[in-house]
Structure formats: C-alpha cells, structure tokens
Image (cartoon, rainbow, N blue to C red):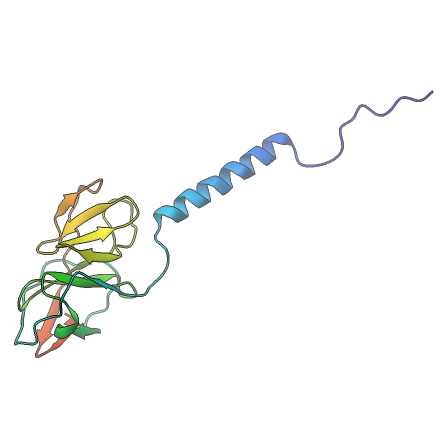
Length: 163
C-alpha cells in the first residue's frame, strides 16, 4: 500500500492571499475617500440668481486645478444664498448675498474628496459630512478643520471667469 504525498498542493501561500485581500480592502477604502470621479456640476438651494450688475468679491490664494481666464458660468446660474460646484474645474462658486460672488476650491480640506453640493448656506462634502460656509469657506462642521481656500474670480457683466 502506498501512502499519499504529504506535500500540500502547489498554489499561493496563505500570507500572499491575506496580503492581497488586505491590499484590495485598502484600495476600496481609499477610493471611497477620493470622491466619485463624477465631474458633473450640482446646483442646489436656490430660487434663481440675481441678473443685476455684479462685482468680483473673491480673492486670495487659490486651490484646485482651475486655469486662469477659464469661463465658468453666468451670474444668473448661481442662486442667491446658494452656489454651484464645477467638478471639472475643482471650483465652487457661491452667491451669499445678491451680487456678491465668491469662489473656493472644491477639494475638501479633510481628506481631499470633492465637495458635491451647496445647500442651506453651506458647501457640503459627502465623504465625511464636512460643511463649509458659502461666505468665506470656513468650516461649519467637521471633521475638516481648515477652510476651503478661496479661488480668485472675475465678474464682468453676467459672466464669471477664473481670474
């Protein structure tokens, strides 16, 4: 009578399988914190914008990947008391009060997720529920601890462009 071989079948080692599963889990977790990759714009919380003469009131140092001189939108597309996210430009434009337009980086300062909406006077990041002021980009609720950087814009007539 012959005995069967005591050597295990050839294949990946247990450590290799466990390491691969851990790496896959890490990749999923990091993807969840990185935004959806959807570059579409979201507009929320508005009854329409002011079509009157507007002044550029945003300044400071910018964040995001927006290119200077790039046309963003028109003043009538930004609701008073609300705003609009331009995911492809990584910019959010707000109108806290009639004719007062601001722009901020659309990249959350917590873990780099893309903010997705403007509702009830705040810019909202869906990844971990950080909220930022539409007036100055300051943190309204965390876990973010730093304000959204302002992005310079130019308002000329009814056109809003990156400065």
